[in-house]
Image (cartoon, rainbow, N blue to C red):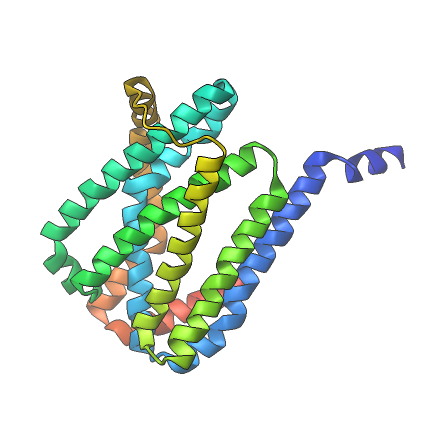
Amino acid sequence: MSNLKEISTSPLIRSSFIYVFCEGVNKAIPFLLLPFITHYLTPADYGVVTNFNVYVQIISVFCYLSTAGALPVMFHKLEKKDVRLYVSNMILLNTYATVASSIIALCLSGIIDKSLNLPSIFQLYAIITVWFTSITNINMILWRCEEKPFKFGFYQISQTALNAFSTIVFVIIMLLGWQGRVYSMMFATIVFGIISLGILYKRGYLSFTVSKEYVRSTLFYALPIIPHALSFWFRSGADKIMLTEMCGLSENGLYSVAMTWGAIV
């Protein structure tokens, strides 16, 4: 009995429960919204939304996902004042990567449009979404490292709820179709990205000091991870591109909805 009591009162168990519960709620919101979205979007519309998410995923690999893994490691290695400088330089590095990705994407916009049926302006929207997501991602990682599961969970659920609410406004009320779904994702991401910037600034994590040492350290950690990060994208994104090419947007949309239901099960 004493062992069970120790386990139940363990901070690790409590934190794990909070993370699992919040993740469940976070996944449940879009799942409950799915029947309404599919009612107002045609299969082809949903196929375009899927391809937008695929494009966001691939851009994310190069703009921030590979660098994000270094932050928990450095958080526990560095002094607090050095962590703040490290975070600032990570944001700077992610910004440079986003600008570079924008230039490359601009040169390849025609090929991307042909492969994903995604107009150039929405390719730009995807890159904007990725940059603001990177800010929120850093903020969330810091809360996890600081063992603040309540803040992490509340923030995560709040962003998902805003995403769902804005989807109702843009897709169901304003009837903007797949564009409305993209606008809702952008809106929620930008709003919480700006809030995350404010939180990071208030906590002293933003500065204009450039540290070549920390930039090199982040790159040294991130660059070898890019192939590993791409492997996840190949398993979850490449099939959507192939399906769009071979069968069309409608089939891609139907497949993506089926995959969503299958993932829930």
